[in-house]
Length: 532
Ligand code: G16
Image 1 (cartoon, rainbow, N blue to C red):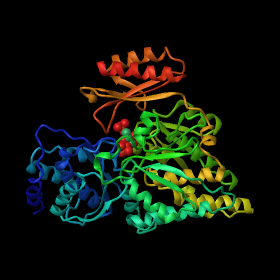
Image 2 (cartoon, rainbow, N blue to C red):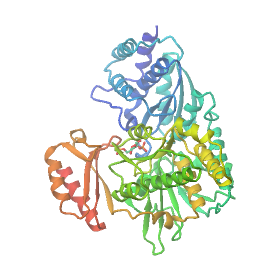
Image 3 (cartoon, helix red, strand yellow):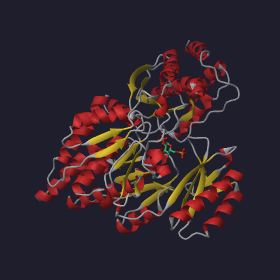
């Protein structure tokens, strides 16, 4: 009886009575030593999800991405490599909170009955994890559950989050999307990069520096760079010490650079040399450089989105192909970027709540949906309709043929399952090489409004409830009223506060006409939030 097996196996992974778990912005995320029972329960959900979808393969990624080394987390990946369907986030939360082993088995059966799942059919799961020390023990809790219900699983070991998403899609498309292994990923992206870099009119890229946050992106980038070859990919890799777990995300990584607005100390570069940072599971990418006066300049997710949207728009125009291109952002997008996309690029913009699942969903409305959070998490989605148009069009001139060819290869360069720092890195390098641009020319597209992002520790972040794509608080109402009054005093002022879905904190974002004003506005809003 699977129930007895569940009860027996679950008894090794008891849930503390005083804990309430929630599947949040990016799955479950918390101190690693609290996660054991959650991992076990996620194993049951993964197996049920696979059985519900006719034994399609489901992904389980063990990571806490940008969080501190003591944290860990887990998220589920649906068959096409997309984020877990929202209704299943709720089921995951329910199962994770079952108080006893018996209650867990009962909840498991209740869910199976409710969704008419045949629990005797085969269940298939693939697993990946980042470099955190807590990973192997948590993997064991997960596989204990998979063993208890007889699910088949493949452990892909230490891979980036986007690599796991890629592998899931490859498996479920029977190899149509690519070879379902880590090496297949390097081959697909690397080959597309090589072809685009060897195309006509490309200026070969100069050396640049990538900070890997001392995380899983480091071995992956080393392998990718080796596959491509240093003649067309001259990358200097820093912060690649994955054998020292305490260094993960410490004074480095995309989140550090975005929030601190300065170089990671390990990146010692000359002025005007472009640099990039990945986050702890390599699904976010930020570029930056020091200008000719040594001033730090950030090229964040908004800058990457605008670069990609304008380049794809240009290729589509030259290929004489009509594509409905749109950009999806969140409230964190710099006001200048939104203006630039609407007024200069002439493209529509949608604003969604934080969390790539929301952006990804909104991006599906376009032929080509470019979605990026300002923190560097994003990708470009080509709809089936767009891919068909691009594949089938017969060119009528050599110029059109060239653009069409590039567009076709570009689709393979981009990981369309989820935001992917390595794929995005190659995309940016290709675009800069095609445009003959350095970081300054890219930066010159528009000037960011000075801004500041602050993390505020609060007693209970769940009291902060938002509306209007997280741009306003409905609760506590008094806090929003005070923010509104404050913002009015600043030229081009805008500010909001929202509870983080991945950390026990409230985030405050502010922008204004000058750096001093943006800093002050952020500080004052943070004080209002902290006082509540
Ligand atoms: C996750 C989500 C992102 C989100 C980020 C911060 O990223 O996937 O969409 O922007 O958390 O979210 P929050 O502000 O709610 O903490 P990652 O890279 O940590 O998985």
